[in-house]
Image 1 (cartoon, rainbow, N blue to C red):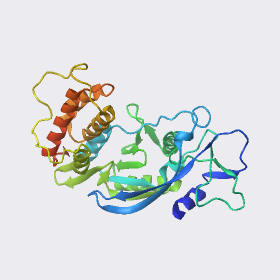
Image 2: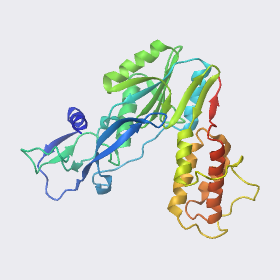
Image 3: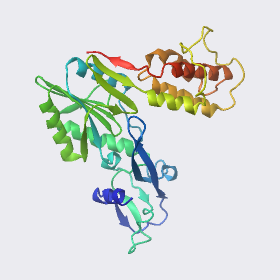
Image 4: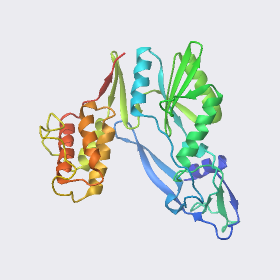
Length: 331
């Protein structure tokens, strides 16, 4: 907690001010979690101080909230390109990434529990920088990052705002941005190191080395290319669906006609249906064999039927029998 608090203070995230009369003051809280390694083993404990977005009021202390993230197709394309040209592919870690965005809105927040200023116990925090938990923080962080990389020569792709391209003569580099996960690949290691140095001058950043694990995806390099696997994530879906002992099947869909929107009895738990449909949808990042049927079950999230849930179970049975499947990228 102390390290997190000190990082917030060093970043000048807020200033203490007397509480103005009649204004909305959002709640704050501490979140405790742990970080895992790529194999699911424990890595370290994490503590994060966040603002409670549920107490924000749209139009008062938050405005635009949309923040782009890089598309899966873009990631696959850039990795394939880098692989074909034997470019270095590195992953970067931005410490306290969402703290780097500047807030445009006026946001007041209660002081952190356990760190209340003894000299001003009734003061509130007037936020100057974005904070985890705020509705607009991802957008503020993206804007700050995009603005900076544009000053060092990058432009964002017209097809994907989270793909940044650096082109100077024969030198070329790409940055893929997904919240605080960053992939950097460049036409030479010298260029990569130069870009890394420029990024580090603006953000507290660490080079994690050659890409091996990002967004829950394990990346293994072989002599004939890259293998992307979501085995651990797939196992978690099976457990969440309580189908660990189910009989596997070789195909994700049966030979019945297409699913109908109104056929059959309504499914008793639409929230569970939407949760599982969303979960298997992310699995299509490395599992193109289930893409079509996943797209079909996602059409009925607003009013799922038992028949639609059976289709999801069929997908999960297929996943059960193909846990070691993944996406192989060749040069």
